[in-house]
Length: 287
Length: 329
Image 1 (cartoon, chains in turn orange, cyan):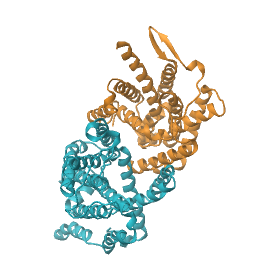
Image 2 (cartoon, chains in turn cyan, purple):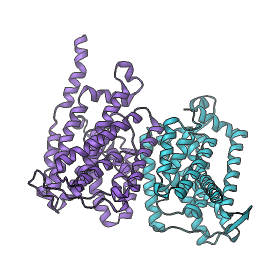
Image 3 (tube, chains in turn cyan, green):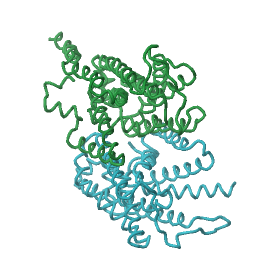
Image 4 (cartoon, helix red, strand yellow):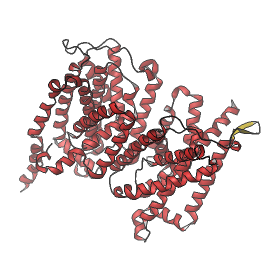
């Protein structure tokens, strides 16, 4: 039982890292512009489908498809930002919610039209399949890869935010948008770039997710709740908060499914409501 | 001078409460399906139920400004209550409806203490979380609710002991419409009262309301409970007219749909939810006939268009075209 507890912890952490990749961009853009972008996972889904098409139809290697997924999601998201989103920055939460839910609906229908409603599979290279044994424990190679990838990205993002000029501008804009503007920071431009990077990360997450949680036309809808939980529990605009919340959610969801399958997702919803009632602005939120 | 200033809000409320000819025409038009489209009475009853549900969301969202992504909780809770009451041997519709709506009201009153404490994203997430919690609970308690198979064995008695629930939906439509009209009148009276004005004040600025003597949390608790009762009545109607209850009544999908319907019609207007329900349900009936896959494409496009071009919904757009005619509706 102890061995399997460790396994659950490992799988849960890998799952949590996936959720982190999917939600970190939303957390930062929500914190900066207060723009409720429920269509964040539509970009993740786009990344997923790009990876599927490239590896299966064009015979690209999986590792080459990942940057392509990132790029595709980033570029398309910028187009949406320029055409639709920027008109609603001053609108109410509700209008933003509705616009982006509309985009989710359209993207789900388009995905169903193009790819059908079946689960997609991605061709993994042989070195990412199977598992490695370590100290009498076997770990899925792909999950190890996923965790390494997520930790690397977290380190990169955290370092970029901490040590670069652009990172300082992003932090200033998250802390106090109006003050940042007054100091001469072009918040709209910073936001557009951050938005593209965040959506790109979601696209990457979508491509990485296929092997773990699958990909179908309803992806943008099914996992929205999980991403919103990560964002709201972690606190808006907080990388550390998102990381912690995603790990917590991944592990508790996996443990719940493993040990109390009859409860279903009851456990995580309960934890979320309780956490939010305790700290309405999230674990690391300031507002 | 003071006396005229004092009577100003009163005169405003009286002007609001006056019946507009278009309103009367609207309610008369709801009788048309009996004559013009007797084959669509089942759809008509679905529309009336959805309209009632949208009306209840309008009370908290449109008037008090409480955004909820979990409103289906009260709808579904009452649906199961009504279904279970009938299943356990009391198939009388009217008392069943009252009991189920009251049960939803109790649930609403209990949760309103949580709702009144939060705003913004935390509030959206908490309403969403509570809705999902209840849906999961119903899914887990399959011995009671029938789980994914739905609640079977609901048998309703004749309405008022005379009218049987038939396949053509004549009774179902009349019943749903009557309940809709009754609760609409209640909502209309409520909105055109000082309490209704206070709610609009809360929507505009919840912090400032207590400063002028209107306690926001107490008002929010009250309207939230009332909205839960109305949502419960809608849910009970659905259970009684279809004689089955599925998990879908509690789902996030239903909460999202009713939000879309309300925004489509125009939130913060009494007829917004009603009009939205008619447009949405008829469009879904037509488009789903062609291909259910594409339904979401059209509703998504419609949503984007409404947010971009019609900020106050269909009613708001009409209102701009004919400001004097529709202002009161």
